[in-house]
Image (cartoon, rainbow over all chains, first blue to last red; front, side, top):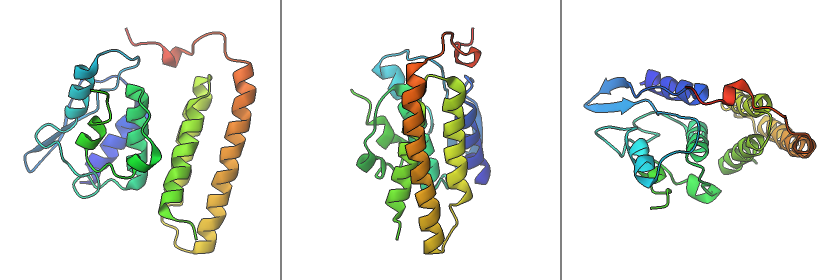
Length: 109
Length: 87
């Protein structure tokens, strides 16, 4: 459980372009590494598929309960996603994000 | 009494302010230092201590914003190698 969290955070912090790799198999939930790339390429479909690619089987992996990420980690993730996709997520909304699909909904469709 | 929401909002402000720097090194440093600072103090319970570190954080935010103005006046001429796209 803790290795998911540390792997996610480690990958966020290094921000090296890596091919998606399966991190951990846990009750049929496959979580792949965030595929960070430098530069702002791709349209909305690619953006959405990137975010959805985060959690393969289950898109509603709750940050707090399933991935054991506390609010500071959530801040980090949201900031990383903001930077990656060049979107600004306002403060009030950021508090309500609990899973990856919430974050994906911020991209202009 | 400092609320959790305020702490999170301070963290975001620090990260956002740090992002604006033209210099890659400073950007990375502010991000790293902000997150480390919050992680180190995340388990504090004593309210006066919490207030103290929160005030420290707020002061640092002011420093970051002030220094940003100076750095924006003299942006680096070449791109840092770490910012180049991997071929």
